Image 1: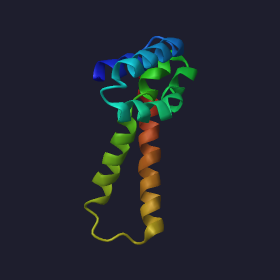
Image 2 (image 1 turned 120 degrees about the vertical axis):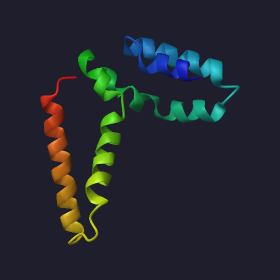
Image 3 (image 1 turned 180 degrees about the horizontal axis):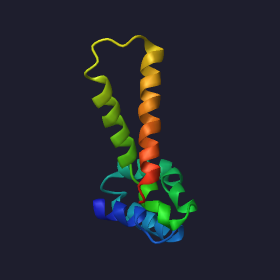
Image 4 (image 1 turned 120 degrees about the horizontal axis):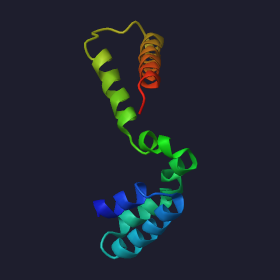
Length: 109
């Protein structure tokens, strides 16, 4: 099943991804209908990255940046015994987010 999903998200074009999705549905509908239904409900949103230039697809189709940001939030807030308030916490997380974004912009994909 993972190979079938990978074929969708690593297709060479949007059209090919939709073809691979159709094949995925035909192949897996009887075995795992809930998975097919779940992906069917959000396939257009999942394939939005195809609207961007191809060189950006790699970074757009992964959740690694989101996971990395959440990990950094946890790393920064865990050792803090007391936070001066909700706004202070938001300010800290905004600072971490901006700092990481600047770092990502300096690092080519």
